Image (cartoon, rainbow, N blue to C red):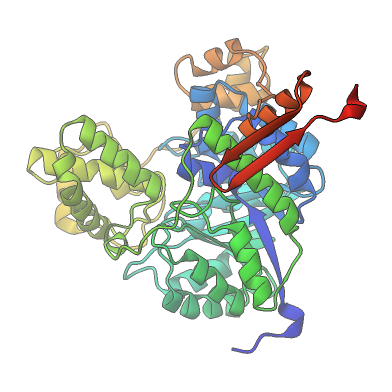
Length: 494
């Protein structure tokens, strides 16, 4: 289709500091790793910097012993000119249980107060009642908002389904951006060609942000096709934290779109400097780099996200059941159909995966039913897009815990009680204590202030500096594969 000459600017959201390392490094990027490149990100020409999701809060506290609120403040002190973006997962945030409304509201308030300038929200059931209140509050507090519709393939997730949800989201929440969130890397060229025009019919001038992953290897092509169809915001990550289960490469996408005649304001020179820094970090810390993945048609059957696949394989190997991996994935596909096609993102990917393992290991389907599966089937997490298979529903209800009632109870306010329980704590700390069990927050506080400095070791430059500092030499020659370097004494240095 023809492209209007006024329609050629494409904006980029950098996902390196959140989703890219979540996919490739199990969310283990530290604040100290992030800080040295923040000033360059600030000058890079991005539309937003994707920084925090609920997984980042969890990992910061439990594994890195860092205060996630302090991470936001530190990075906000350096990235001052463009919005920092945070995501809220429905109204359950970190765990499975739906949280009281006043807790969700306090999260929005504290995110904005600490420096988040754009709040995105998504619900894996596309039950917009679960996210609209948070988006409206974020706008009231002065933040930009991004309403996300999570993409998947199923008989119920049609173009008409997404078009209707997009229209509802725009009308009810008045979001600044509509995101098509392809967490499973499932979008194809054919589907993007049919879906984007249907979305654009109902959203007016609201920009569409496209977020995908490279699990099937075709996300970069999907991005380029989406831009042709009028998508103006792309989520990308900087090499070497791109490709694989992460987002398409910023560098490659900029070059390709510029060659196609699009205007990109992101400074490729700054991006390359940041890329060099991340290459040094990956080599120094022994962290994996993203590599392009081969096309896998089976991925469209089970639709498991990359991080979940990695965890599932590791859990089966630990239990001596690695030979059951493919069988479990086929069972995931079957369960998904029976449970009314849940979208395979957190928490439903974990829910389906756990039930699949139990079905295979025990040899009887739904003989053991986790509490979360029964709650899902009974509508605790929101309105299902279709009906659960009646025979399966009977087994889930009969074999699940008797403690779970047919209807969810009303969620009572808890914030006032939290403030009485922790009178000397801040609301930031109270939220962490509410959402994280045990002594995790105490251990984070005992670890002290967040580490803010990191030494990046570059072997060749350091060797040259050390040799140059020495005296009593005339000539030094370094040679290696593709390299020959000669250093000669400078007489004027004496």
